[in-house]
Image (cartoon, rainbow, N blue to C red; front, side, top):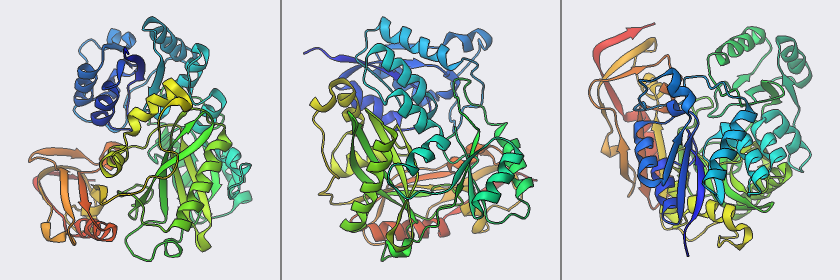
Length: 473
């Protein structure tokens, strides 16, 4: 049987390219469409070229930037894309039609809605237009959650300072303000009290104006204000070292939600995630509570065929709070780690579902039978500031070396992979990309508790040595 063809809208985020392309290319022909060439790193571009039968880059950018080169690294695409949503949809339809594709997918949050519209017009399986739009607009998402049977919370759309003032008056504090259209926790802000809240809102509003997004990204209001969900991990875990929230990775197949894995987390820095541990050690009853909430959330949005990444708050008395869900794969290495722990290739399964629907062969319940735990861990500038290795007021620095002490590891935990900056690496701490971490580690062990303890020890004991070249703010 000849391979079928899938169109991949290549951009930032979701399942890492090093797994995604190799997994999918084994069973399908890949046509890669790159709407934002500046959002693709050199390494990503090499994988695209290696595994795709055709690569199409949007020509508009090259007409204005003839000397363009793919960057070495990137966390957020720092450029504008002026195309409207309809123009992006038409581009996708044009490419998909020319190559007669059988499915289309993307790992990027910002292209979910245009892709759903293109898929619907072409008669291909997708998340569904209305569902995709709700999954992309956090204000509409919260409204859908509140009617889906999960814990309802107060929320209001916010555009202006006046809107925010009315929201904080109505909702009270603590209050969470989220951009409705972004990802990676960019701009998510906690307001614990009303004093100074106007100035903080205006600062966040001003900051978001510096974060470029494609013109195709649409929303009813730029923010949503919500009641803050207070987590209580002690009511869920008997051990220390875990956060008060988890994520659930799954698929929706013809409207039916299918969970695969629950990931435990280690404590955050603000709203920035620090580590994910595959799979969760929560007891069976806790897992069922979480899965039930995730099912109501995803099916409540009306999602049809897509990957899902659902974030769940673990609250007092084992009450489940929905943070948000996304109609795409999780980022970091969570999807590759599922394959390492359980042998299940979710990247390929997603394409199987998009091509064959319920005729695809996929697990129908939470995966089990693991013999190890794998963690994806990042060390951020804040970790080294807390340990005194980076002065608190440094804005630019050049790294000499980073040392990860092996005696920080507990039990049989080992570091399987590591990405540590080389001597001379320059870091601009004023850029958002700095929050993507200075060091990334993959840990493996037979005990989740030992892995979590190892992460804690590394965060406290790792050292960074700077060269003389650093600048204070």
